[in-house]
Length: 549
Image 1 (tube, rainbow, N blue to C red):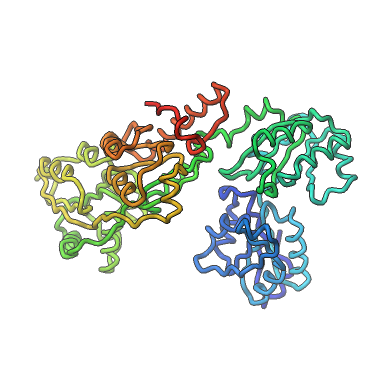
Image 2 (tube, rainbow, N blue to C red; image 1 turned 180 degrees about the vertical axis):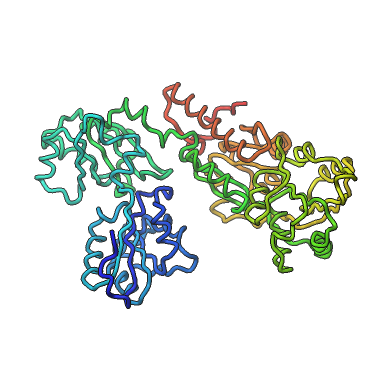
């Protein structure tokens, strides 16, 4: 909507923003823009992690009071008097974002806060979000309407009147009921008492749109037995919210075909990625697309070389025309050169007239972010050997300079150096950075690694195997071990690990793809055998099947 009351410039501005039902990917572009511009962020606790990732580093998030004992045990604060927090910040001329779960138009408190702003002449706008009652059924594989135009009724069990239950129970509408896990049986009973048939299909979804999502299919008459058999109830977690969909759209046979989210190959898997956050970013995004929950644990720390003079001379030589080529064999090498450039007040223009090579796509991407488009990236294997396959031999007619600058780690192999010399090039092999073993991860992570809390671990090099075992211990035998290549797999086996997945190519993305294929095959085998689909961490150590080759 258009901002209201534009004649009060002394006041700030409030954006009432719908953060969706939980999946961070459901934030709208407008929501991300508003968050990036916010001075103050006031968010429902359920979506705080979703929205603050897009806010500025030093955005003000006023402390909010816990008013509910159950929220203390769950470590989730309950908002109290948010209207005053919003109004106080806006009166101070701040740009305020008030983020709510789902959509602001379906949030009664947000409506009251909008009226308070309008009454005081504070300008505001509304950024709609995906409503929980709509988004969760979509992720559960339950479309709410069909081509016949089925009527849909939304019911909040907490505030529903006897008349509401009677109307819904006496009809054939698809009912979307917002309730809690320990109240869903009572809601089903209300509908049956009002006339709905006990054999009416029903789905119940908890933690909808997140990788903790779980859905049960039953009928109004059997939901109590289904939840009891699944050992869901009774439970201390019974107060968590759920979305129940009542009607033929929830039929089990149809949901089995349409359950796209929970049937992802790695759905809910906790996957350990032993790389730094910068290195693991695209890999973690890929794992999330398969339904996994990646945890990034650095095993290597990068430090400057002990003697920086060699690097300083090489960078000066780069500027003065000493080199025909510069070859980057890692993202860390790009970072090291970039930092040295910044130290000397240089930028990407210093690469003018120099050919640039990158060992693979991730290194090339890092160069592009620096403002440099590589001239050479391997067309085949993304490795030093793959780079040599495409590297041209030195030609004194076409190459005025015969020297290559190779900034790299202190523990790098000699493959590329030897290959370039064989092609006729002179190589300045320069230590641009040192790699050292990282500090141990938190105790909780170490216990999860050794105790089987992770479903899989991705090893992208022999050093990640050695360093992870060194700083955190050996992964439990229920954990699926995935390795990027034969050398890494050999190192894993030398450390007593059974290798389940081997990447067909030395690429982190092919490795993630191979793990997804493994997960899909494992899921298909369970369904074919009539067994429940479980994650590796949910299996007893003695019951785990041998890994597929």
